[in-house]
Length: 228
Image (tube, rainbow, N blue to C red; front, side, top):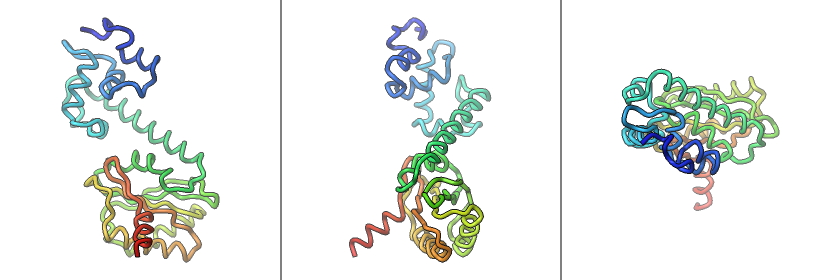
C-alpha cells in the first residue's frame, strides 16, 4: 500500500510535524529523505531494506558513491543530496561549538565525531581556542601514523602561534573504530603538552575518535594518577 493511503498519524512527514523528528524511526527518517519508493515498495519499505543491507545507519551515511549506487532507488542525485546534508550537520555543529566557552573537552565531542569518526585514514587535527576558551579555528594537521612523533610538537606549536591560540584541543581518529588510546598516543600527547607549555599554550585535551565513541587521554591520565 502506498504511504498516501496510510493513516495520517502513521505517515512519516505528518508524524514528524505532529510529534517531532525524534519520534521517527531510522527507516521513517530515511523515507522522508528518499521521498519515493520503488515499484511495489513504499519509501518506508525501501528504507528498511536499505538499512538491513548496510547493517546500521552509520554505514549507510558513510558509504562511498560506489557502495551507495548499488542500492535500488539510489543514485548520483541522492548521493549528492546526502553528502550536502551531512556537511550541513558538520557546519551546524561547528557553528554551535564556536558560540560556546569551552571548559570541558566533552563539549567538542559531537563535532569531532561528525568530522573524524568515519575517515578511512588516521587524521590528526586540533581545535584552536582563544584566551577565553572560545573556538578560533579547526585544522587538520597530519595524516597517517603517530609514530612520526618528532615532527608533531614543532608543527603544532607553529600552527598555534600563527592563530594566536591560548589553548588547544587535539584529536585524532582510529580507523579501526576503537577509541582506546595506544601507548604511542599517550607518549605523543606528553611531548606535545610539554612543547606547548614552553610557549604558554594550554593543552586542554587530546581526544581519540572511534566509530561513535570517544576517549579522553587527559581523563585517562588523571585517573591513572589518582590511583598511584
